[in-house]
Image (cartoon, one colour):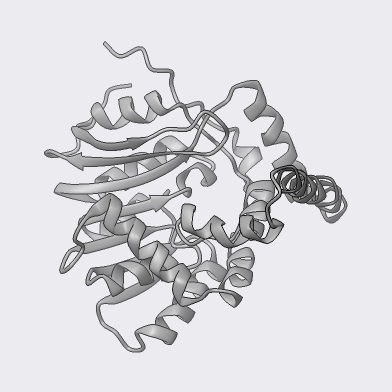
Length: 285
């Protein structure tokens, strides 16, 4: 029997205020270029292989970048997000690159809505990177996402690592960010300069250009922007991380096999690719 710790539920009251992810993604799209798209494509190839002709579900599509990358790699893409502004980002990218394309559909919807998720059907590839821990109900989000994976299909998921007391401290910071304008200004005023000056000091000690860190970030972070990610990190609430073994145990109990794994020791994301070997098993209790 597995001894992996259980994923802890959030209190419902904590999930009432949310970070405006879609507004942050609109800022990201202003600087999106071909190099960032190419990095996103490469990460999909590295983790999922050939996407050509496969049905691809992007849960919590955010900026729409990975839906775009999957479509450019030949997948039949369906994107959805809870945040209307994120849906707008995906629609903007589709209009730029695939106007009128019937093989890229976009909806607003919630992974917590089982009827909505079931209405989508099942997919060969399901992708949800750094999303489900922001729903306010990670267990339900994971369970519904598992239902969307077709037998033999694969699921690439990334979930923030649980660091115990340090996680509790960051949860309080994130809650303060979304509470009101004053507390948000305080969080930004403290941590953004701290991030910037900390990075600057390291670069000066190593005698390298401070700009190099920002240019190279997207190469190691799937085409993302360091500064946009700062705000995503500070404001990303609800926030419900999990230990890697908890995620593994959750999917193993539901008939999934782990194909790829990358774990972290800090507060970053643990990444998994699971394959669904059969029907999703009902797990008692």
